[in-house]
Length: 183
Image (cartoon, rainbow, N blue to C red; front, side, top):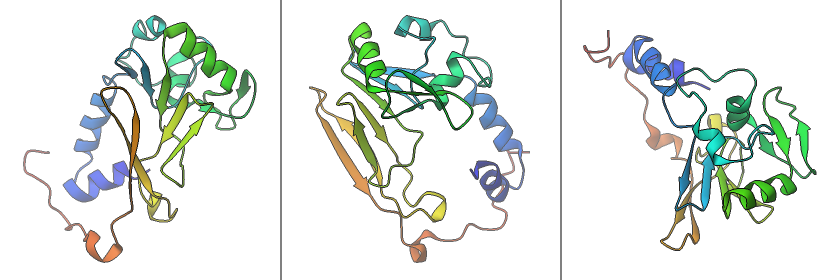
């Protein structure tokens, strides 16, 4: 989605991209806020029922093409019951009944995720899942707004909405601002 090209353009080398992709293999798969809000990139997995099952996944690897880790990255909620095949070819589609069961089993009140473009910046489904999209005017062509979800000390939700910067103030990156330390 442009990260490789951006690194090459900004730093004049693919080394920054290589270092970043190596570090990505060590990032957490998910997070839990105040034992109530489950944060994940994509969604749920039919092979995961509890948070403890996520905790034991060996994260220090690239995301595989299938399995629980893949599902956490690439699954999407949908207006279905149970589980369905994802048209993406990775992960699954899952319905409100799956969300309700997962939240109940783990004492959660909300699943917060990203991974799908939402024109309004955020979308709530099943009263227990929210998709937050934080890239305005995605790929410089979608015309969407972006959002950030803020939770207060009582886990009340507030969305901050923002537009893309106008083209005339974005600026054009210099041709080769590569720092000497990125060889």
